[in-house]
Length: 457
Image 1 (cartoon, helix red, strand yellow):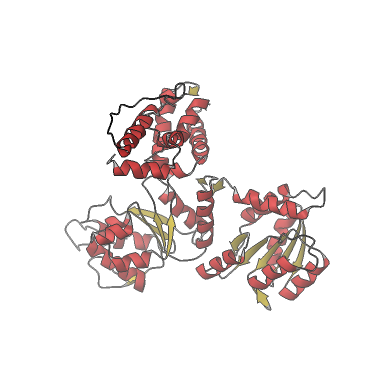
Image 2 (cartoon, one colour):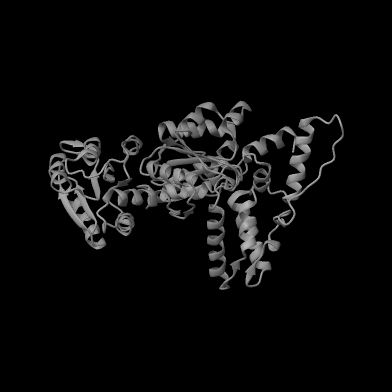
């Protein structure tokens, strides 16, 4: 049975964690200080420590030190530590990560999330051979492969990194800048940050800065008073006012007009703004998450994004990985999308094996959005089984039956030209699937993209 040591001088919080442990059916001991935790660790080595980061006689650093160096240690493997805190900040989140914490939770404790964490460890905990170190290693390995984070799906290494970043920054009020190609799920990531944050009971409002007329966007963001301009027949509350206490997601922020960027910067620095047509300053308590599918440095060089605003938004940048770098996540996402379609239409369809292979080989320039649209069309056209032929554009593993190809060269043809012809011939044989072509050519996908850029393709 799993043995948990709870270290917290907050009686109410430690009791809440104790009740979660009881629900999970694990043994839990309580300590209220670093000294008491030290004594408990000397008596018996736990399988997990759940500790407050700030204690009367120390904190996270001391707890980690004890978990790694207890006299009761029978193995070189450290005891996993989950930190809890009522003083969430980006500094404490980074510190917890740096110290090597397994997780970082904010009070009041989310009982469901804590229970899920303990149950995951309980399921991995097998002490029949007395090898506790092996068990803890398996727990950590299993945790690194989680396939879900909220509504986000993916078990690839790049997604695990994304989950960790979101988990660390969410409890803070730090401004987040999501960067990545169109269709990579920036709004979903922003919403996940909001849902994991302390602001999750307040509104989450997304605003696409590139989809609103430049003449209307200021009114949409800051609001206006009745009669402030032609057509302003009544007072209008803007996004800052309606999102008060919550999160405002500024998608495609690099498309915002320059004159409005100045006003946005002022709000971020002062926390106040005015509706159009008003002289009264209003205070705002809004967390900003911005996003762009463009490279900020290039947009700044083009004079379309203010450098000072960029620095103010870029407090905690997060890079959203493109789908082509996520490997087996493509199949996970495809199955999830199909489950949603089956549920909505009450039609239990399945993928054929060749369909999943084609999905994984295609490089998806439109990312998850393109995948979803493609599967929805294939779902409509299919009966019980979705085959590769139903995908659009039509993708097949061309050349799988016959992997030979021929190119025409003459004496005197340069090696670079032969290289160019070989690459284009291989791409054609693979039906345009760059991932498969790179594999056949024996080069990395990045190298293939670099060559194609050189060829102007």
